[in-house]
Length: 568
Image (cartoon, rainbow, N blue to C red):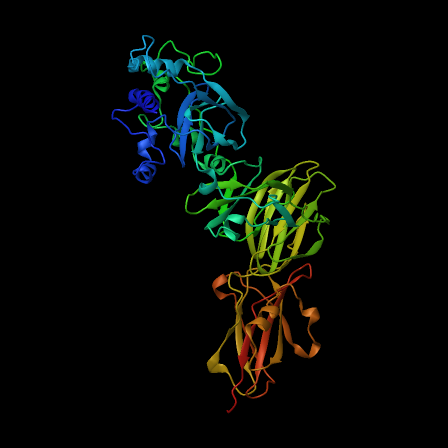
């Protein structure tokens, strides 16, 4: 056993500027050592019972050593590839004899023993090639020096290694249930609900765990460190090892430094030496989302895109050790949105459109003849609505519309126009739209910037109210209506009354006060007043003014509630 320790120390000597004690479970300082991660960074020794993280350059192998001090000892070695497949094998190293060839009883020169260990391949116990989390486990292993050789032939990558001689008591990785599958229990256009059986680590062993859900569009992940590698903003820069930490001596050859084992091939298969001046490529950031949700085993993923395939993975993470185990992931395609019926617009005809809250409507305008210009009249009856106009797929217009607006776009022979109307978050939208290639007189009346009705408080009487409103330079017909309302007339009722597209044709004849024509070339004088008579004392009235255009389409001003005096 003394020989075993001497050999391992000689292996460590070139890799460290200080002498290191072999970390085993029999040492008093083991717990302190595994907490001090720097202790193992520049060491080729795998500590017993602690997970290490390291880095591999492509086509550049690494070798680690692990000591088993006594025969018939349980042994478990777990290798976790992070973002690339690995080739790895575990071997039991043949150690040199305790005595020299002359039978003197003295140890062979230590440098000679060191070279013998390095050169010996050892008896292969297990090998694997792929990107699964794979492990070797034996209930009874002989004492000796075990060596783990790793190689990445695809790209530079991270990996993790965990080795222990007490696998039954350690249990660092959370356990999976007997059915480790992730199930899709509900599927919608933008949501997917997932469910999985709880980990026995929480339910039976009472260890603190949390579940992390990972969503992406590419593939399922087999380890949590693979997810973390993908989440890095720039893998090539952020995850490159720092000199003196994860480099072994033969790694420095890539950066122009001499290697102290030049001429010796450190791999378990003959491979060409990597070229100097290794290029570092940064990869584009992947569309991936990680959500840790505590100990719940049901989760609904929202804000997904319709008719899109997603891959879902669940990882159970031991909060104390931060080590994780992957459930068997799943995938699902979100449902298609119900196809919207496209409304055909006729040249010069007004079309009424209703858009649900946060919904959308599509309209199509295909002029029958050649045209130089096309004009769109939009009348938003309630809240603002967003309009987009595309001509043969090319976006020509995108903006919000309130009230009445007119857009004139350049025409093109045989062009087809697709109009998309999108509602807002407040509520449903109603609007009128007219498309034409021959605009003459405006189908919708022109409106002033301010469409409020002003009431004059000093002119109120017990039977009348005097109001005023603005006009425009265009001669239009104005009609005023009145309706008695309760004193507790609320905002919800007022909002329903504010639909500007509801014309005077829906009003009772008894509510009509009068109609008159009015305009002024001087906008500062485009104001008209009217006194509404025949009202009852102490009563509230809803007053509405409608302006009617040449095409017969009307627009309602903002409603106004007035109250007559109770005593005069």
